[in-house]
Image (cartoon, rainbow, N blue to C red):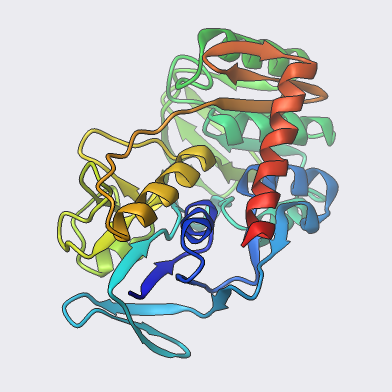
Length: 326
């Protein structure tokens, strides 16, 4: 039985680890540690977020899928499949146009670092993990940072302790944190909100994550461009197609994270191979770094300091080992 996996990120490589005979397709030459993009901006070293793929990953761009004929068309030819796992990651919704710099790729991080050489005032849209870490990094680079968050607290999906700690830490560093603030528009050099205008030389989107546009282009039933799957990660449109990682969700909702992607990649492959295992995810740890301080939620409890740093570094180690293992 031939299983094709579209996308070699956390979910794709986790799928491959369960079935070494599967074929993983990815257009990149490397595995991207997305949670280290802020570190690339800080250091200027792209290698800390890019781990070269092994020969098990076929470097090719997927052009389209013929679900009825069970054929994937790429820029290097066509491949048939018996089972298909789609793990195409995420994209950012840049509804405010080219005045906003996205941050989803290694090239984006390098571009932001270059633009920071000329920028003095930076606005970051989104107070999730990426926005919080990014605000700390850029403030330490000597810029004036304004962090805009629509919710009434930062890190709204994490514990209140983590939210409060992030707010206090960023404010102490000099970051202007605007909570409960809705972005209504963006113009060149200006963010328009329900609480007034923010002048900025560089505007960075750290929110608006959704599934890749190609999911909708392929005609798959989706929610915010994330393909809808059942409890077994099977597409609701095709019995021989599964979804894993950030590009999929269930009717109830599945969060976007590396841990969830790894878990879903494993379950999708096992079910594609014949098992009937319901997908149940568990967020073990969400750890951030602001300045020199590590903190976050570990096993449902707020942690900071050496324990948090150890958990963060262990997560990076596990990610690298995943790439090396396949």
